[in-house]
Amino acid sequence: MAPRRFPLVRAPTEPLDPSTLDWKFRRQLIERSDTANGRPPRPLADNYRSDGIVVKHGRDLASVPEPSEADDESEVNDVEEDFETLKHYLQDSWFPAFNVGPQAKQNFVWPYYPELQVAPGTRKLRTISRIMPYRIHGAACEYLGRQKDKQLEETKYSGNLTLPSIDFAKCDDKDMKMRMQDVNSVTDITKLLIAFAFRTIANCLHILHDISEGEDGDALRKFLHFRHSSKMCPVKDNIFDVISLPSPHPGRTSMIILVIPPWALNNMDFISFIDTGAVTPGSLDGIPTATPASTSAVMWALLWDICSKQKCQYFAVTTYEFWAFGNFSADMQTAYISDLFRAPVYLHDAQVQQEMLPSPAVSETLLFWMAACVGAGGILWTPCNSKITS
Image (cartoon, rainbow, N blue to C red; front, top):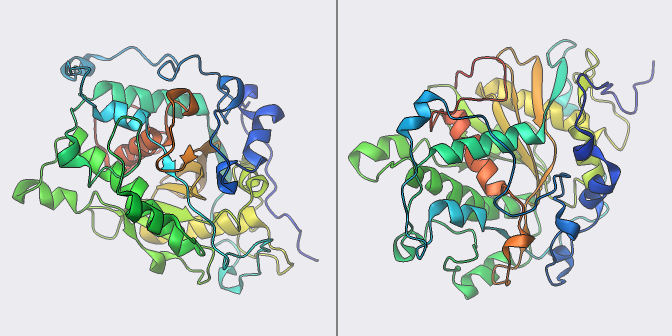
């Protein structure tokens, strides 16, 4: 029998929040962003986030659970308003826009990957379930609300907090322009993510949780920095790359980030990847030889292989601007995946206003995801109903 064109047959396993899936909001995800074409930045229309949540004010999100008794020990410091604080820095940050170079493949067609063919029953993924936006948003806000805010001295932190932010010193203009010109490959995007987003997030975790430099802190810090880990990817071509967060436990990895360039993964295929439901048994084992390949099947096969080999449960997938966060159950049979999050992408020296930024910011969600996978900050909620061991 000829293989199916779209092998992942998934029916919804739980009711989805209509406000996050209404087409008029999803349409924002498939429209090409203005910044990619060099047009001036513009705010999201009518204060609607790309995930469909109406934001009345940048700081007004959703109600979160009442603090538990443990929260009483984590009161927020009183910080003078005249100084930039870590939380404000994250809320007001954005991703610097880059120029797509002439060597980037346009109108990309996914090829057949024979290296992903495995024996039937090898990949045991059975169900893909949704992590609802209001749950991950609420958990991120609850986590940040429990942590004491920190004052930032620009002269001390400007080299480590590299994402541009409204009231924080910008990177050197010449250095930034050189970095953002002619992005031609997935490796170029990986380098940008490590230099800006992941370097910033790792250092924010160090600051927020008082992980100091020196003999005591360095032993822990080495496990709290993201690394370029292309060798983890079983497919060797120019559209997949891997960033990892190591684990202090031997043979494990705390988090895997699969990087795919935006010219190779359009937003409709990204939406197909995050669809939920039951996975047809064996559909991830025998990847069809037809061209183009099923994008979602290839992505899930890659993630399952990498995460199972690295004994990793937390992961993220990104094209730089769009993000999905997820994790696997301990037996690797269930995957939990978020809806799409859109990072604000503007020129590094753009005059960005707060109403142009989503809340919570992708940087805040990424910080929460990092804290969750390493067990920092006394997080009371995790998206996976199985015990996290890494």
